[in-house]
Length: 194
Image (tube, rainbow, N blue to C red):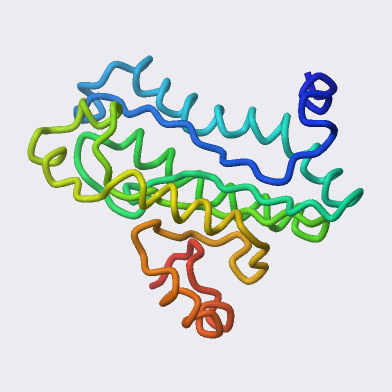
């Protein structure tokens, strides 16, 4: 598979936007369908895993051969940062994407990978159709904001953001202004504070 994909891209791949999403209907854990619950993990984690297994080698070789940008943008969710009854599978799978992104950066950063994790925003999409109406109607963001932010992240290498989480609705100029603080205090990464 790698060879055919490398051939289609002329042996080069600079940017991978790694996005997969499935959300089970909102139900408490014991009331949920185990297969549907697990399907959320299969799509949200295994889907990204499969894409990275195929495309990361091509990205790394593109970077070493021709200074390709070697940027991987993994799409997570603001749901990764909060708890809401009935959506445990979605939220925990998206939380796993954050740590996995940090791990990829730690493992392949020295070879040129810049891995970012983004929350696209609270957007009404097909997967939110299973959310309670009150939740769905409170989703304020537009898809173009996510597109603009992802394009901005892909437009140049920003080493200082490697392995970090960003929310697409944030003001990117404000984010840049906080660069020194983010790096010094190792912000926008997972940690437990106690």
